[in-house]
Amino acid sequence: MILMIKKGEITKNKQINNMTVNYLFETDKESIKTYYKMKCKNNLFFTEEEKVNFISTVNEQLKNFLEQKEFDCILIPETKNECFKEIVKNLNYQTVMIRKRSKEEILTNLESQKMMKAERKKLVDNIMQMEDVKIGLVAANQRERVANVLFEDIESIKDKKVLFLDDSVFTGSTFKAIVNKFKVIDTVVLFSNKD
Image (cartoon, rainbow, N blue to C red; front, side, top):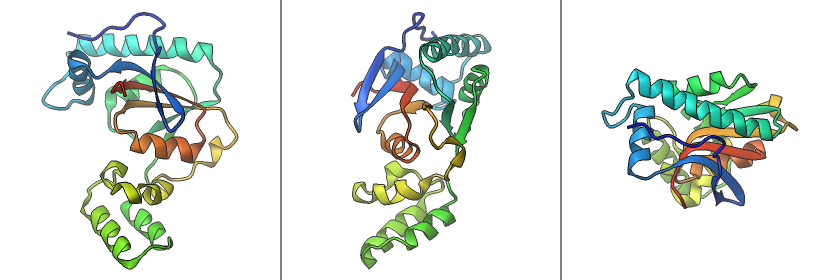
């Protein structure tokens, strides 16, 4: 079963760091299955019909949202999620992709930060063990250090009205880093937990 939403219903929201996160689906049992299908995780996949229906429904909701507000561009995270890429492409809106810096660039940037030797070693060791640097896997007291250097700068969006669009926000760690770094004015995510 594919989760369906009513026309014009991006009304769910929650607060993360004084920023309202608008979202389409809460993570109840049915919507988490849809999330896994969209991400092709846990051995769950959309049928072609489900995929078409999901993309169409989400695009309709996002277009309704975009008609009510004015943005210069949509900011999206770098993603391998083909379903999300298709949703974004169908919006026909100027889109800018946020790219993570390489692990080497992140470590080089962290080297220039002042910190205790033991703290630096622990942070570097943690990052070295990651295949892909994920801010949620960094110790809470070190996340801000990593957040400041995790993403490449994007000069083209300075002083622009930017909407951040993502497929999911659960812990909020990456979300906070993006919103703070890129001065996002509004957000929409497809899936999120209620609080």
